Amino acid sequence: MAKKLTSREEDYSKWYNELVMQADLAQHSDVKGCMVIKPYGYAIWENMRDVLDKMFKDTGHQNAYFPLFIPKSYMSKEAKHVEGFAKECAVVTHYRLKNDENGGVVVDPDAKLEEELIVRPTSETIIWNTYRTWIQSYRDLPILINQWANVVRWEMRTRLFLRTAEFLWQEGHTAHATKAEAIEESEKMLHVYASFAEQWMAMPVVRGVKSESERFAGAEDTYCIEALMQDGKALQAGTSHFLGQNFAKAFDVKFADKTGKMEHVWASSWGVSTRLMGALIMTHSDDEGLVLPPKLAPIQVVMVPIYKNEEQLNALSEKMDELSAKLSDLGIRVKVDLDDTKKPGWKFAEYELKGVPVRIAMGPRDLENGSIEVARRDTKEKQGIPLEGAANFVADLLNKIQENLFLRSAAFRTEHTTEVQDYAEFKEVLEAKGGFVSAHWDGTAETEEKIKQETKATIRCIPLDAKEEEGKCIYTGAPSNKRVLFAKAY
Image (cartoon, rainbow, N blue to C red; front, side, top):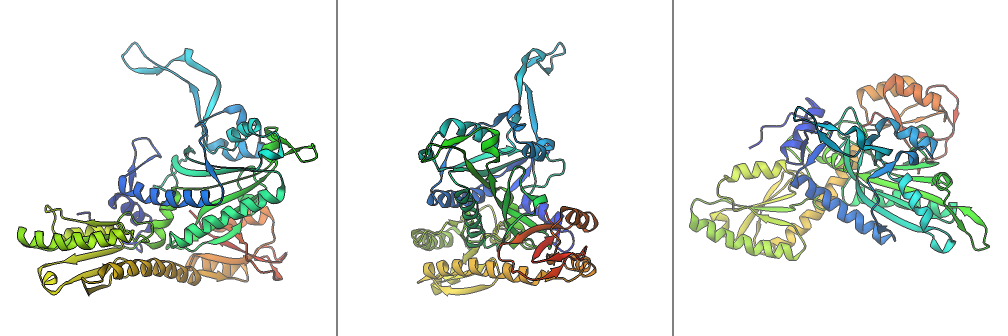
């Protein structure tokens, strides 16, 4: 059995790292900054991926795949884009190794690439170079493409799932005939992400627009969903970018409109990554381990028999198999744990650590009484119920757990969102309470940077539903017409 986790109150960062590893989600790789996603962690990611993939296809998108390697010259075609990613790029310079005289392996100096290749940090450049060959006329538009892939961004300080040198993600890249269509696409995908976060991850998010300083490199506007973790820090959970015509102009992607006039194409891009795994963990989990929303849990219900001999085990397993079949018929992912090398107490602790939403236990007395014990992971409440009708009871309970996790997280966010009127109050709230701090800002990058340097808080977003109100910037006193959300962030 895994050792007891460090508590969140004692050391939140240590708690997180221990939980990721002890719950068998991921581990550090021998390649510095990279991770191995273990089967249980990957099963959660697969559930996320499958749901999102359907949501993309339901909104008219198709999947495609583009190369991992990008010619270096492509990166230089969009100035802000290369500036934004230059420090994170991994570069391939040679294509062959050879043995040296000492029996070791060295790079073959004669195998130098004519043009160096960038290992994909994001795919706008290679995709827009490709779109140039796909688009000639308005009849070729829109192009609505998504790609599931891995990317490499050379991070110096890493943390499993939250920030690694290589991670998994999806990236949508769309091409449109008009500015309005591209903006509509950017906003639509933001709401797809928000719906996924709230309805499937049970994680409330703020939908907003990034400040100019925080925009994606090469974008005219970046829309985002921001979530609040239990330690009071914000986490950017997904972004959608209106790219204007920047990449179309950089790669000369034009189309003939209905009058025959040549115009540059309008673009969007959008993505979420395995960072969502970190968000899921830090939104719901506790000092005993993972707490998973039922919709994404690889195992939604686990059944554990309690017995003293083989005869009892056979009788219990027969009843559990019957219930398991009924649960499966309702579309519920269920596991009957008949492993006789581990005691029930060990199993209870293990499934609690792994965040299985519902645990069912059954012993000889339960068998006699025609009952089972049902325990829910979110509240740790246990109750005995009749075996008759148990499948429908459990299905309803899973829905209640999903709803409770969202409501619990939403209440936490409300409690940790504070409106402030001046800079002294701003700093006091950040230090004592954390969370989202709603404040007036004068709209300048200079003020934003000074606040960041002095407090480590950044503007997470300008909420889409921010109401117009007259106010004064907390830092400069200059006029402001709406509040923005600041927070310390991952």
